[in-house]
Length: 94
Image 1: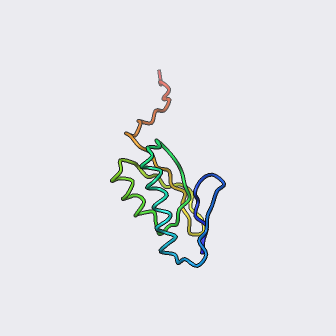
Image 2: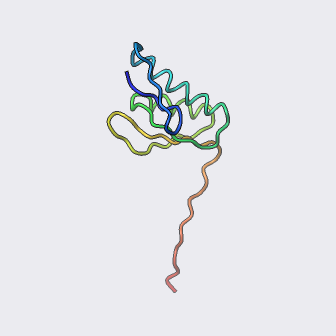
Image 3: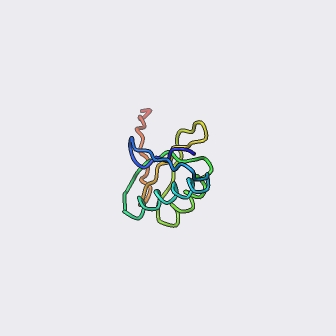
């Protein structure tokens, strides 16, 4: 049994359920947040769910970016819409 991140500072666990159930709840939570139209949000999810989350995100018009990873968990950020170009300052040589 493990904790599933629902929101900032809010985690749930389901005693008596197996890992498959936990993985399903985790993906379900991401799907609900994407369906609500949030432009950007981050969650810690199981490493085992990253590719399924990426596939779901792409099908719903989101991009999934992975961040920190530790002890079987990966922080993912999901963003909707087109990616903005990244700007950087370049100094002229002359």
